Amino acid sequence: MTPLATLILAAGKGTRMRSGRAKVLHEILGEPMLAYPLATAAALEPAQIVVVVGHQADEIRERCGGAGARFVVQEPQLGSGHAAQVALREMTEFKGDVLVLYGDGPLVRPETLQALRESHAESGAAITLLAMRLADPTGYGRVLQKGKKGSVKAIREERDASAAEKRVNLVHSGVLIAGAGVLRGLLDRLRPENDQGEYYLTDVVEIAVSDRLEVSAVEAADSGELEGINTKAELARAAARLRDRINERHMEAGVTLASPESAWIGPRVRIGADTVIGSNVEIGGETSIGEACTVETGSVIVDARMGNAVHVKPGCVIRESTVEDGVSIGPMAHLRPETVLRQGARVGNFVEIKKSEIGPGSKVNHLTYIGDATIGAGVNVGAGTITCNYDGEGKHRTIIEDGAFIGSNTQLVAPVTVGRGAYVGSGSTITKDVPAGSLAVGRGKQRIIEGWAERRRRKD
Image (cartoon, rainbow, N blue to C red; front, side):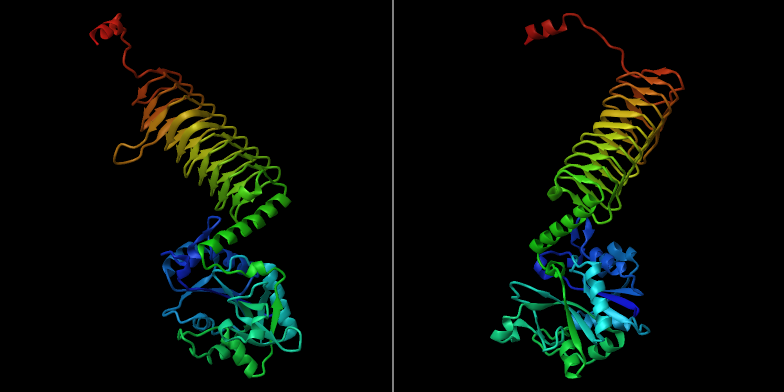
């Protein structure tokens, strides 16, 4: 098949979003909107992907620059036709077909675009449009066809359409494919003959037809795929459609979703068979979850790697962490970045862990903060324990070796090491290393003052 290049037009500000953020940076399931057409384009394995950016170009590059695309800046921004001209100037040597997509069209599927590509190749048309049929076409450019099925004679904008033309419900999605040479020649002839003084990409159809070039249209099976996003309401509707699409894929692969309508799972997430996801759960980023896991209601997991048979109880937050097989977490636990829980570890309710490793079979069950620590195997960390890792200027490390026992309400003032098999008495503040096999108690001596409470009552 003819080599393919993909252009994604993403330079617009999106004023109808009522936001200071560029439209294509608004997030859907934790990913910028532009990430979706980028992924769709990549699935077609094109020779190159060129993204035309303008408003907040640097931020767009930063968020989406890892997708293997080349970013070019449209400045000034003089319409979609001008954006395509800018892109093609960066592709002077390319001789294949050019597919034009839009950064605010996250719903289109690779299968739909592949069908468009194949139809273009079979028909021999100069340009092939991707059209959609709408019950209410108001606001869209109508695709007017000749007698030959699929052959296009014009795209008529609604403001210019006659009463009969307005009844046509086949409309242009904006997506098109054309040979690079043909498209360059047509774009060079665009003129900004409109109230906005912009170059419209759709005008290439009129020029092509006037040159007696064949323009064809392919009707998408699902018009919903081609819906663009211009408002926050449309953003929310697109997010719901993508959520349902992603959730269906996971359920077909053997994942149980207790409440599919409330499970928000990002497009890059991987989940193993027989895992159960509860209601109101969010899973995003580059997260992988193994088989036979349980993630209960209200949990948020982002950029985490989880093994098999992991149990995440309600209300947990897990970010940029590694969790091995058979670990239990929560309820209401918080794993901050660079946390590692080794096989069979247990982290209980109201525990926060940051940049620490919890060894195999170790337990940190209640009301505890572990930061910048290395905890060995088989360690018990009692309720209310705190690693005091910050001295006001820098962070310091706590090391608790295998088999140690940390009593409740203990403060470990880093840098400090508790040796293998050592015990720390409850209520202690530990500021010096504890040798292996020893007992450390660091608390004030208890005093008993007989009759004190009665004397206080008399005084009152």
